[in-house]
Structure formats: structure tokens, C-alpha cells
Length: 299
Image (cartoon, rainbow, N blue to C red):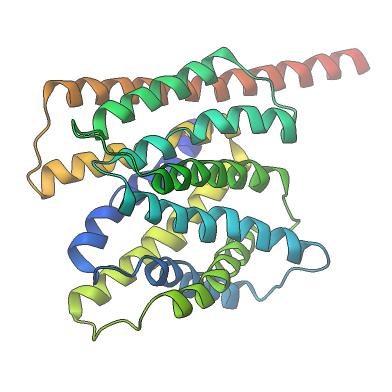
């Protein structure tokens, strides 16, 4: 029961991330990706940091800024760049390769076994997302493609290193450090490359508060909690929920159509998510068996 609860809580994060596109297009001023990313990370991070009242020490300063850059600054910047340059949700396809990258990075950094179920789940999810988000017109911009692939690597590295580097501090403190570091990195970039925000109206404030509190603070506490408690490959496949939620919200809120291929791909993506969670169950059972064998041998 605890494991299922962990999975459900972790799944809340990508489900909320799926609403980012809707909130951004409907509630925020257009053309400020770096500023929006910075305001999504920095206020939430500072708020948590004030509550935590603890700063990194020693080499953790370097590690935290690396994690903040991978999970927030670089990933969000490349994701927005890919979204602006690639048509018809193609950016989501490139980001969807992240779970497959995680499988192999986890082998290198965490000595995790590469399981067939993890690879199959990642490939199935990628295929489902490709069908779900792609349009008939394909006009690939080389910079957009590079940004999409690099963004997937950034997200994958961030996921694996977050599991690999676990400081002896509470989860909220660890989350506060990363959000703040990511926001600090984004701040000068937003000030340098983008103009000042226009005069904001009520819907803009609602959008920024939603993205900062729910899309930043709440979701990343749950996401980092899941990385700490679950197998990294199974956590990565939960990321498929994000584009799935985005498409469903577009259908429900914006009246976008879903054809037979899209409906079929939704089933494929959901199946890949389920298969990805089987890896975590198998890994946990093996760990419990190993512990029992060790206890038996000692006795």
C-alpha cells in the first residue's frame, strides 16, 4: 500500500505539469519564457528556504547548482526553445526520450540493472507520445531538434543525479536548495535576454501564482520525494503523464479534437506507465529477498 501511495503522489507532479501549457497560453503574457521559468522557480525556492533555515555546506554548493541547472534552468530553457521552434507538439516527442536515457544513466551512476521492462516501457511511451502530439505537417528546425534532445538529456541527468546525490537534510530543504539555485541561474538570463514584463492583470497574477506554488513548489517536493523512494526508471516513465494530461486538458478545456489514433495512443502511453511501475515492484521485491537471505545467513 505504501508503494502504491508513493507512486500516486509522485504521479501528481507530472499531472500538474501537464497544465503548464494551458496556464501559460491562457493566463500569462506571451513571449517571456525565461522570465516565466525564473518566476516559477525562484519565489517558491526562497519561500521554502526561509522555512528550512538551512544552507548547503562545502561541495554541496556545487552539487546543488548543478542539480538546479539540470532540473530547472537548462531544462526549462531548452524546453521552451524547442516548443517555440518545433511544430505540432514535436517538442514533446524529443522530451519523451528522457525515460530511455534515464535507464542507461541509472546503470552508470546508480549501478541499476537495465531491465527489459524498463526499455520496453520507455519505447512504448515515446511511440505513444509521438502519435498523440504530432501533426501531419513536419518542418523540423535543427536548433529546435537539438534543444529538444538536449532538454531530454538535462531532465534525465537531473533525475538520476538527484537520486545519486542525497544530502543528509529533509526533503523540503533539498527541494528549496534546487529551486533557489535554478531560479538564481535564470534571473540574469531573463533580465539580459528579455524585456521587462508588461503591466500585469489579475489573470496574469493567478497564472504566476499557480505555476509557482502548484507547478513549482508542490510538484517538485512530490517529484523529488518519488525519486528518493522509487526506482529511477519507474519515476521517469511517470513523466509520460505530463503530455498525456496536456492533451486531455486541451480536449476538455479548449475543445481540441481527439481522433482514433490519439485515443489509441493514450491507451499505449497508459500501458507504458503501468509497465514502468512493474520495474519498481520487481526491484523492491528483489531487495526484500536479498535482505531476508542476508538475515538468514547471519542467523
